[in-house]
Amino acid sequence: MMNELIYFDNAATTPCNSQVVALMTDILANTYGNPSGHYSLGYEAKEVLDTARGRMAKALNAETNEIYFTSCGSEADNWAVKGAAMAGARKGKKHLVTTAFEHHAILNSMKVLEKQGFEVTYILPTEEGFIRPEDVAAAIRPDTALVTVMMANNEIGTIQPIHEIAAICKEKGVWMHTDAVQAVGAIPVDVKQLGVDLLSLSGHKFNGPKGVGALYCRRGVVLPNLIDGGGQENRHRAGTENLAGVAGMALALELAVASLPEKMAHQQELRDYTIRRILDAIPETRLNGSWENRLPGNANISFLGLEGETILLDLDMHNICASTGSACNSDSLDTSHVLMSLGLPEEVGHCSMRFSFGKQNTMEQAAHLCDVLEEIIPMRRAMSCMWLQKENKVRDFGGEGEA
Image (tube, rainbow, N blue to C red; front, side):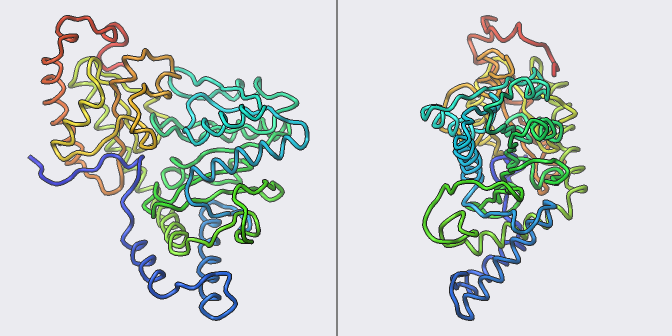
Protein backbone atom coordinates (compact mmCIF):
# COMPACT_ATOMS: atom_id res chain seq x y z
CA MET A 1 0.00 0.00 0.00
CA MET A 2 1.51 3.30 -1.12
CA ASN A 3 0.56 6.28 1.04
CA GLU A 4 2.31 8.92 -1.07
CA LEU A 5 0.36 11.13 -3.47
CA ILE A 6 0.85 9.77 -6.99
CA TYR A 7 0.33 12.23 -9.81
CA PHE A 8 -0.68 10.86 -13.22
CA ASP A 9 -2.23 14.02 -14.69
CA ASN A 10 0.82 15.62 -16.28
CA ALA A 11 -1.14 16.43 -19.46
CA ALA A 12 -3.18 18.85 -17.34
CA THR A 13 -0.17 20.49 -15.69
CA THR A 14 3.28 19.52 -14.48
CA PRO A 15 5.15 20.18 -11.22
CA CYS A 16 7.43 23.18 -11.53
CA ASN A 17 11.14 22.35 -11.84
CA SER A 18 13.11 23.33 -8.71
CA GLN A 19 15.67 25.27 -10.79
CA VAL A 20 12.79 27.20 -12.36
CA VAL A 21 11.32 28.01 -8.94
CA ALA A 22 14.73 29.27 -7.73
CA LEU A 23 15.18 31.49 -10.80
CA MET A 24 11.69 32.94 -10.53
CA THR A 25 12.08 33.59 -6.79
CA ASP A 26 15.31 35.48 -7.39
CA ILE A 27 13.75 37.58 -10.16
CA LEU A 28 10.67 38.40 -8.10
CA ALA A 29 12.86 39.50 -5.20
CA ASN A 30 15.68 41.29 -7.02
CA THR A 31 14.72 42.14 -10.61
CA TYR A 32 11.34 43.67 -10.01
CA GLY A 33 11.73 46.61 -12.38
CA ASN A 34 9.53 47.25 -15.40
CA PRO A 35 11.34 46.20 -18.61
CA SER A 36 10.07 49.43 -20.21
CA GLY A 37 11.72 51.59 -17.54
CA HIS A 38 14.65 53.76 -18.67
CA TYR A 39 16.89 53.32 -15.64
CA SER A 40 19.23 50.63 -14.38
CA LEU A 41 16.58 48.42 -12.73
CA GLY A 42 14.46 48.60 -15.87
CA TYR A 43 17.44 47.76 -18.07
CA GLU A 44 18.18 44.73 -15.88
CA ALA A 45 14.59 43.57 -16.29
CA LYS A 46 14.80 44.11 -20.05
CA GLU A 47 17.92 41.94 -20.16
CA VAL A 48 16.07 39.13 -18.36
CA LEU A 49 13.24 39.43 -20.88
CA ASP A 50 15.59 39.37 -23.86
CA THR A 51 17.50 36.40 -22.46
CA ALA A 52 14.26 34.46 -22.00
CA ARG A 53 13.16 35.22 -25.55
CA GLY A 54 16.50 34.04 -26.88
CA ARG A 55 16.29 30.81 -24.88
CA MET A 56 12.79 30.12 -26.21
CA ALA A 57 13.82 30.82 -29.78
CA LYS A 58 16.84 28.53 -29.58
CA ALA A 59 14.81 25.68 -28.10
CA LEU A 60 12.27 25.91 -30.95
CA ASN A 61 14.81 26.72 -33.71
CA ALA A 62 13.10 30.06 -34.28
CA GLU A 63 14.37 33.62 -34.65
CA THR A 64 14.32 35.73 -31.50
CA ASN A 65 11.89 38.27 -32.99
CA GLU A 66 9.46 35.46 -33.89
CA ILE A 67 8.61 34.74 -30.23
CA TYR A 68 5.78 36.64 -28.52
CA PHE A 69 4.97 36.06 -24.87
CA THR A 70 1.35 35.56 -23.80
CA SER A 71 -0.49 34.76 -20.59
CA CYS A 72 -1.15 31.12 -21.57
CA GLY A 73 -1.64 28.69 -24.43
CA SER A 74 -5.32 29.62 -24.75
CA GLU A 75 -4.44 33.26 -25.37
CA ALA A 76 -1.87 32.22 -27.95
CA ASP A 77 -4.49 30.06 -29.69
CA ASN A 78 -7.05 32.87 -29.63
CA TRP A 79 -4.55 35.35 -31.02
CA ALA A 80 -3.44 33.02 -33.81
CA VAL A 81 -6.94 32.04 -34.91
CA LYS A 82 -8.73 35.35 -34.54
CA GLY A 83 -5.76 37.34 -35.78
CA ALA A 84 -5.33 35.20 -38.88
CA ALA A 85 -9.07 35.36 -39.53
CA MET A 86 -9.07 39.15 -39.38
CA ALA A 87 -6.00 39.37 -41.57
CA GLY A 88 -7.63 37.05 -44.10
CA ALA A 89 -10.92 38.95 -44.06
CA ARG A 90 -9.10 42.07 -45.24
CA LYS A 91 -8.27 40.13 -48.40
CA GLY A 92 -11.77 38.70 -48.80
CA LYS A 93 -10.84 35.34 -47.24
CA LYS A 94 -13.39 34.31 -44.63
CA HIS A 95 -13.04 30.53 -44.59
CA LEU A 96 -11.16 28.60 -41.88
CA VAL A 97 -10.18 24.93 -41.60
CA THR A 98 -9.71 23.05 -38.34
CA THR A 99 -10.46 19.64 -36.83
CA ALA A 100 -13.35 18.31 -34.79
CA PHE A 101 -11.13 17.32 -31.86
CA GLU A 102 -9.16 20.48 -31.20
CA HIS A 103 -8.79 22.02 -27.77
CA HIS A 104 -11.70 24.27 -26.83
CA ALA A 105 -9.44 27.32 -27.09
CA ILE A 106 -9.57 26.68 -30.84
CA LEU A 107 -13.12 25.36 -31.15
CA ASN A 108 -14.69 28.15 -29.12
CA SER A 109 -12.70 30.76 -31.03
CA MET A 110 -14.14 29.27 -34.21
CA LYS A 111 -17.67 29.56 -32.79
CA VAL A 112 -17.09 33.26 -32.15
CA LEU A 113 -15.81 33.76 -35.68
CA GLU A 114 -18.76 31.88 -37.17
CA LYS A 115 -21.07 34.38 -35.48
CA GLN A 116 -19.07 37.12 -37.20
CA GLY A 117 -19.70 35.69 -40.65
CA PHE A 118 -16.76 33.32 -41.09
CA GLU A 119 -17.28 29.81 -42.45
CA VAL A 120 -15.46 26.93 -40.75
CA THR A 121 -14.75 23.42 -42.03
CA TYR A 122 -14.26 20.83 -39.28
CA ILE A 123 -12.26 17.77 -40.38
CA LEU A 124 -12.99 14.48 -38.66
CA PRO A 125 -10.04 12.34 -37.49
CA THR A 126 -9.66 8.66 -38.35
CA GLU A 127 -10.81 6.02 -35.87
CA GLU A 128 -7.29 5.99 -34.42
CA GLY A 129 -7.28 9.77 -34.02
CA PHE A 130 -5.28 11.07 -36.96
CA ILE A 131 -5.93 13.91 -39.40
CA ARG A 132 -5.20 12.88 -42.98
CA PRO A 133 -3.24 15.47 -44.98
CA GLU A 134 -5.37 14.69 -48.03
CA ASP A 135 -8.50 15.67 -46.09
CA VAL A 136 -6.91 19.01 -45.25
CA ALA A 137 -5.99 19.55 -48.90
CA ALA A 138 -9.56 18.80 -49.95
CA ALA A 139 -10.95 21.28 -47.40
CA ILE A 140 -8.82 24.25 -48.51
CA ARG A 141 -10.59 26.74 -50.79
CA PRO A 142 -9.50 29.90 -52.59
CA ASP A 143 -11.01 31.93 -49.73
CA THR A 144 -9.31 29.93 -46.92
CA ALA A 145 -7.44 32.23 -44.52
CA LEU A 146 -6.08 29.68 -42.03
CA VAL A 147 -5.67 25.98 -41.34
CA THR A 148 -5.17 25.05 -37.69
CA VAL A 149 -4.43 21.47 -36.59
CA MET A 150 -3.14 20.55 -33.13
CA MET A 151 0.26 18.86 -33.06
CA ALA A 152 -0.72 16.31 -30.42
CA ASN A 153 -4.20 15.69 -29.08
CA ASN A 154 -4.63 16.65 -25.44
CA GLU A 155 -6.88 13.69 -24.57
CA ILE A 156 -5.74 10.70 -26.63
CA GLY A 157 -2.19 11.87 -27.34
CA THR A 158 -2.10 11.12 -31.08
CA ILE A 159 0.65 13.02 -32.91
CA GLN A 160 -0.44 14.64 -36.17
CA PRO A 161 1.47 14.88 -39.49
CA ILE A 162 2.02 18.62 -39.12
CA HIS A 163 4.97 18.79 -41.52
CA GLU A 164 2.91 17.27 -44.35
CA ILE A 165 -0.11 19.48 -43.61
CA ALA A 166 2.05 22.61 -43.44
CA ALA A 167 3.60 21.76 -46.82
CA ILE A 168 0.12 21.55 -48.35
CA CYS A 169 -0.82 24.90 -46.84
CA LYS A 170 2.35 26.53 -48.11
CA GLU A 171 1.71 25.22 -51.63
CA LYS A 172 -1.80 26.66 -51.55
CA GLY A 173 -0.74 29.97 -50.00
CA VAL A 174 -2.65 29.49 -46.73
CA TRP A 175 -1.33 30.22 -43.24
CA MET A 176 -0.89 27.15 -41.02
CA HIS A 177 -1.18 27.21 -37.22
CA THR A 178 -0.63 24.36 -34.80
CA ASP A 179 -1.62 24.21 -31.15
CA ALA A 180 1.52 22.56 -29.80
CA VAL A 181 0.69 22.98 -26.12
CA GLN A 182 0.81 19.22 -25.50
CA ALA A 183 3.80 18.65 -27.79
CA VAL A 184 6.38 21.26 -26.78
CA GLY A 185 8.66 19.79 -24.12
CA ALA A 186 7.20 16.31 -24.68
CA ILE A 187 8.53 15.52 -28.18
CA PRO A 188 10.98 17.31 -30.51
CA VAL A 189 9.51 20.54 -31.91
CA ASP A 190 11.44 22.46 -34.57
CA VAL A 191 9.38 25.23 -36.17
CA LYS A 192 11.54 25.40 -39.27
CA GLN A 193 11.39 21.65 -39.79
CA LEU A 194 7.62 21.67 -39.27
CA GLY A 195 7.16 24.54 -41.70
CA VAL A 196 4.31 26.14 -39.73
CA ASP A 197 3.52 29.85 -39.73
CA LEU A 198 2.13 29.99 -36.19
CA LEU A 199 2.62 27.78 -33.12
CA SER A 200 1.18 28.02 -29.60
CA LEU A 201 2.69 26.71 -26.36
CA SER A 202 2.22 26.96 -22.60
CA GLY A 203 4.87 26.94 -19.88
CA HIS A 204 3.14 24.75 -17.30
CA LYS A 205 3.07 21.73 -19.62
CA PHE A 206 6.86 21.21 -19.42
CA ASN A 207 7.61 21.83 -15.73
CA GLY A 208 7.43 25.59 -16.00
CA PRO A 209 5.04 28.05 -14.30
CA LYS A 210 1.34 28.50 -14.95
CA GLY A 211 0.01 31.76 -16.36
CA VAL A 212 2.56 32.19 -19.14
CA GLY A 213 2.76 30.98 -22.74
CA ALA A 214 4.04 32.03 -26.12
CA LEU A 215 3.09 32.34 -29.76
CA TYR A 216 5.60 31.69 -32.52
CA CYS A 217 4.90 33.89 -35.56
CA ARG A 218 7.04 33.17 -38.61
CA ARG A 219 8.79 36.25 -39.93
CA GLY A 220 6.46 37.89 -42.44
CA VAL A 221 3.30 36.76 -40.63
CA VAL A 222 1.76 39.84 -39.01
CA LEU A 223 -1.38 39.43 -36.92
CA PRO A 224 -3.72 42.17 -35.75
CA ASN A 225 -3.38 42.75 -32.02
CA LEU A 226 -5.64 40.76 -29.71
CA ILE A 227 -4.79 42.91 -26.68
CA ASP A 228 -4.34 46.67 -27.18
CA GLY A 229 -2.63 49.10 -24.86
CA GLY A 230 1.07 49.81 -24.49
CA GLY A 231 3.91 48.97 -26.82
CA GLN A 232 5.10 45.70 -25.27
CA GLU A 233 6.06 42.66 -27.40
CA ASN A 234 7.16 44.87 -30.29
CA ARG A 235 3.81 46.70 -30.13
CA HIS A 236 1.86 43.50 -30.83
CA ARG A 237 0.74 42.39 -27.35
CA ALA A 238 0.08 45.03 -24.70
CA GLY A 239 0.57 44.51 -20.98
CA THR A 240 3.53 44.66 -18.61
CA GLU A 241 5.45 41.44 -19.06
CA ASN A 242 5.30 38.62 -16.52
CA LEU A 243 9.06 38.77 -16.12
CA ALA A 244 9.54 35.93 -13.64
CA GLY A 245 7.05 33.80 -15.57
CA VAL A 246 8.67 34.17 -18.98
CA ALA A 247 12.15 33.62 -17.51
CA GLY A 248 10.93 30.51 -15.71
CA MET A 249 9.20 29.19 -18.83
CA ALA A 250 12.29 29.72 -20.95
CA LEU A 251 14.54 27.90 -18.48
CA ALA A 252 11.99 25.07 -18.17
CA LEU A 253 11.90 24.62 -21.94
CA GLU A 254 15.69 24.70 -22.17
CA LEU A 255 15.94 21.99 -19.51
CA ALA A 256 13.16 19.93 -21.10
CA VAL A 257 14.81 19.97 -24.53
CA ALA A 258 18.20 19.05 -23.06
CA SER A 259 16.78 15.94 -21.37
CA LEU A 260 14.18 15.04 -24.00
CA PRO A 261 15.53 11.66 -25.20
CA GLU A 262 15.83 10.27 -21.66
CA LYS A 263 12.48 11.74 -20.64
CA MET A 264 10.66 10.31 -23.67
CA ALA A 265 12.14 6.84 -23.15
CA HIS A 266 11.19 6.85 -19.45
CA GLN A 267 7.62 8.00 -20.06
CA GLN A 268 7.13 5.55 -22.91
CA GLU A 269 8.24 2.68 -20.69
CA LEU A 270 5.67 3.64 -18.05
CA ARG A 271 2.98 4.19 -20.70
CA ASP A 272 3.49 0.85 -22.43
CA TYR A 273 3.65 -1.08 -19.18
CA THR A 274 0.40 0.49 -17.97
CA ILE A 275 -1.50 0.02 -21.23
CA ARG A 276 -0.36 -3.56 -21.69
CA ARG A 277 -1.12 -4.59 -18.12
CA ILE A 278 -4.58 -2.98 -18.05
CA LEU A 279 -5.64 -4.46 -21.38
CA ASP A 280 -4.34 -7.90 -20.38
CA ALA A 281 -5.65 -7.99 -16.80
CA ILE A 282 -9.01 -6.17 -16.96
CA PRO A 283 -11.70 -7.48 -19.31
CA GLU A 284 -13.54 -5.17 -21.73
CA THR A 285 -11.11 -2.30 -21.76
CA ARG A 286 -9.91 -0.50 -24.86
CA LEU A 287 -7.11 1.87 -25.75
CA ASN A 288 -8.29 5.07 -27.39
CA GLY A 289 -6.00 6.28 -30.16
CA SER A 290 -2.96 4.68 -31.73
CA TRP A 291 -0.52 2.82 -29.48
CA GLU A 292 2.58 3.62 -31.52
CA ASN A 293 2.17 7.20 -32.76
CA ARG A 294 1.12 8.94 -29.56
CA LEU A 295 2.77 11.11 -26.93
CA PRO A 296 5.24 9.10 -24.80
CA GLY A 297 3.40 9.88 -21.58
CA ASN A 298 -0.23 9.48 -22.67
CA ALA A 299 -2.55 6.51 -22.05
CA ASN A 300 -6.29 6.97 -22.64
CA ILE A 301 -8.29 3.85 -21.78
CA SER A 302 -12.02 3.13 -21.62
CA PHE A 303 -13.31 0.83 -18.87
CA LEU A 304 -16.55 -0.29 -20.44
CA GLY A 305 -19.64 -0.20 -18.27
CA LEU A 306 -18.40 2.35 -15.72
CA GLU A 307 -18.49 6.13 -15.47
CA GLY A 308 -15.06 7.73 -15.64
CA GLU A 309 -15.97 10.05 -12.76
CA THR A 310 -16.58 7.03 -10.52
CA ILE A 311 -13.14 5.62 -11.30
CA LEU A 312 -11.61 9.05 -10.76
CA LEU A 313 -13.08 9.32 -7.26
CA ASP A 314 -11.96 5.79 -6.37
CA LEU A 315 -8.42 6.57 -7.51
CA ASP A 316 -8.44 9.76 -5.47
CA MET A 317 -9.31 7.73 -2.37
CA HIS A 318 -6.10 5.79 -3.10
CA ASN A 319 -4.10 9.06 -3.41
CA ILE A 320 -3.84 8.73 -7.20
CA CYS A 321 -4.48 11.76 -9.43
CA ALA A 322 -5.70 11.13 -12.98
CA SER A 323 -8.23 12.61 -15.39
CA THR A 324 -11.30 11.72 -17.41
CA GLY A 325 -10.15 14.02 -20.23
CA SER A 326 -9.12 17.64 -20.70
CA ALA A 327 -8.52 19.55 -17.46
CA CYS A 328 -9.82 22.69 -19.15
CA ASN A 329 -13.23 21.05 -19.47
CA SER A 330 -13.27 19.08 -16.20
CA ASP A 331 -16.36 20.86 -14.82
CA SER A 332 -18.48 19.53 -17.68
CA LEU A 333 -20.19 16.12 -17.57
CA ASP A 334 -20.62 16.11 -21.35
CA THR A 335 -19.13 13.21 -23.28
CA SER A 336 -15.61 13.92 -24.56
CA HIS A 337 -15.88 15.64 -27.94
CA VAL A 338 -12.53 14.05 -28.81
CA LEU A 339 -13.78 10.49 -28.35
CA MET A 340 -17.07 11.29 -30.06
CA SER A 341 -15.15 12.60 -33.08
CA LEU A 342 -13.52 9.16 -33.41
CA GLY A 343 -16.97 7.65 -33.94
CA LEU A 344 -17.16 5.97 -30.53
CA PRO A 345 -20.57 5.50 -28.87
CA GLU A 346 -21.46 7.99 -26.17
CA GLU A 347 -21.30 5.22 -23.55
CA VAL A 348 -17.64 4.58 -24.36
CA GLY A 349 -16.84 8.27 -24.13
CA HIS A 350 -18.23 8.43 -20.61
CA CYS A 351 -16.07 5.57 -19.33
CA SER A 352 -12.62 6.77 -20.43
CA MET A 353 -9.66 7.68 -18.24
CA ARG A 354 -6.49 9.54 -19.15
CA PHE A 355 -3.26 8.63 -17.38
CA SER A 356 -0.42 10.99 -18.30
CA PHE A 357 3.07 10.29 -17.01
CA GLY A 358 5.82 12.75 -16.10
CA LYS A 359 9.53 12.51 -15.53
CA GLN A 360 8.93 12.29 -11.77
CA ASN A 361 6.83 9.11 -12.03
CA THR A 362 8.32 5.68 -11.34
CA MET A 363 7.63 2.11 -12.44
CA GLU A 364 6.63 1.31 -8.86
CA GLN A 365 3.93 3.99 -9.09
CA ALA A 366 2.71 2.66 -12.44
CA ALA A 367 2.49 -0.85 -10.98
CA HIS A 368 0.56 0.49 -7.99
CA LEU A 369 -1.89 2.23 -10.34
CA CYS A 370 -2.54 -1.07 -12.11
CA ASP A 371 -2.92 -2.89 -8.78
CA VAL A 372 -5.57 -0.40 -7.69
CA LEU A 373 -7.43 -0.53 -11.01
CA GLU A 374 -7.47 -4.33 -10.91
CA GLU A 375 -9.11 -4.03 -7.50
CA ILE A 376 -11.65 -1.24 -8.06
CA ILE A 377 -12.89 -2.00 -11.59
CA PRO A 378 -14.32 -5.49 -10.79
CA MET A 379 -15.70 -4.15 -7.51
CA ARG A 380 -17.52 -1.26 -9.22
CA ARG A 381 -18.78 -3.48 -12.03
CA ALA A 382 -20.17 -5.91 -9.46
CA MET A 383 -22.20 -3.01 -8.03
CA SER A 384 -23.55 -1.96 -11.43
CA CYS A 385 -27.03 -3.25 -12.28
CA MET A 386 -26.49 -2.44 -15.94
CA TRP A 387 -23.29 -4.44 -16.00
CA LEU A 388 -24.73 -7.46 -14.20
CA GLN A 389 -27.85 -7.51 -16.37
CA LYS A 390 -25.72 -7.15 -19.49
CA GLU A 391 -27.81 -4.20 -20.62
CA ASN A 392 -24.87 -1.94 -21.20
CA LYS A 393 -24.72 -1.19 -24.90
CA VAL A 394 -20.95 -0.78 -24.86
CA ARG A 395 -20.41 -4.48 -24.15
CA ASP A 396 -20.91 -5.16 -27.85
CA PHE A 397 -18.46 -2.45 -28.88
CA GLY A 398 -14.91 -3.69 -29.10
CA GLY A 399 -13.50 -6.50 -27.03
CA GLU A 400 -11.00 -7.27 -24.39
CA GLY A 401 -7.70 -5.60 -25.15
CA GLU A 402 -8.99 -3.94 -28.31
CA ALA A 403 -7.04 -0.91 -29.46
